[in-house]
Image (cartoon, rainbow, N blue to C red):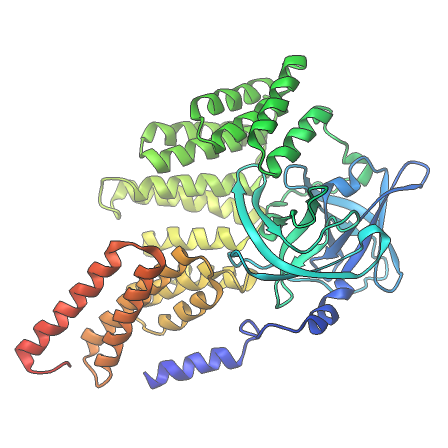
Amino acid sequence: MKRQLLILLFYLGNTNLFAQDLTIKQLITKAENAIFTVFAADEQGNTFSQGSGFFISAQGVGITNYHVLDGAHSGYIKDKNGNKYKIKSILDYNPNTDLVKFQVENTNLKSFNYLHISYRTQVKGEQIINISSPLGLEQTVSTGIISSIRTDEMHGSILQITAPISHGSSGSPVMDMKGNVVGIATFCREGGQSLNFAVNATQISKLSHKRNISVSQMNTNPLETKMVKSANDAYFMGDTNKALSLLDNELKTNPSNHLAFYMKGMIEFSIKNVESALSNLIKACEIGKDISFYYKQLGKCYFQLYIYTHDTSYAEYALNAYSKGLQLTTEDAELFYHIGILFYQYALKSTENPYSDNNKQLYLKAQEALDYSIKIYPTAEAYTARADVKKMIRNYGSTILDCDKAIELAPDYYRGYFTRGDIKIFDIGSYEGIVDLERALFFVLDPKEKADILGLRATAYERKAFQELGANAGDLAAKAILDYEEAYKLSNQPMYQEFKNKLIDKIKEYVQQRGSFP
């Protein structure tokens, strides 16, 4: 116990991950030099659009909203000190999430201040701060809270915030009180000052293509008509009926618009109109047969149906859709990631022994797909997923190395600590893994995810108490009971109550046989 306490104190004393919230003044000082104003110019060099942005690397990789540079021939940024830098190349972009990643011209090899992306799960009520350039007022600070969180397949996780977003704020960082980016401000509903939205910052990791094109080559999709854009905006704001109505009108006038079919399919899938959703997504794939993204999204929908129904035919449909996507591109890290997850989940849900030869082959296929994903674009999610796969192959040493890499890439992403702690405790037999569970608990905010960690830690305490039967066994058992109780309160899952009651009965039986515990 003393050894574990010393280890925990070592971690707490040697990392800034557990730093206390900063004051607003400290946050501004920390972040302002990484935030800039973005200008979009036409062929004559005249500025016609302005927004905000921020650096995510010392080499000058920046983030802003797609709509800020949409239709531009060139672009440049201006930092807090008035220095201007030309946007050298567009690295990747996604109109659906309204994000673009770019590289600024850096002939002097300047090291830029940059912001860190948060991988924590955000919760309603969390305090946030935004620094932006609304209406040309550079480095304007606003504060608020996350008032709502919504997730959909087209836009990912969307944060509604109370910090005001005005014209010019688009693309600016929404930060937590430690200065980490949790969202990218995108737009507000006119006439409703409190209805301001941000795309979850984790969407940045999905900008994984290596396009390296000029600003002028980031042309607007001709299928992204005014009606399609309005439908996307309506859906982003949560008005599903209006979005579907606009898309129906678009398809009446332009029945070959596969983007409209895709959007309609994704929206219908989100409201569980499954049959029509799949029909529209398949139509999008048939018309836009050279667009791998459609096949990937169709595969993801089939995969969700497989997870929900356990119908293996959906898994086969998902794999078929993913395979067609691979025929069009082998450079999509996210596509390989989802193929890996499909093989992994298929093996987990198998009625065979989890460690059977057949399942081992599935795990190996999952690992191979995740290997490709990481090779193309390494992310904490991919490393953690591969760690889960390697755990099932019983390659524990390599599993821990993948967890280490995930933590290195995303120090506040709880899954890396959670998986590493699980491996150390239950596969290697080292209770030092409890330290990792402590760290996972520090970073997780979602009640269900927190309950999972508490349940695992309770099991570790229980096992340690009965294996060692040392002087602190009673304390460990008491901690286990408290963790089971807290896990039940957070999740309302009866199994935690059952685990607690079984532990109490186990202690009573021990006392009856030996007179005391331990």
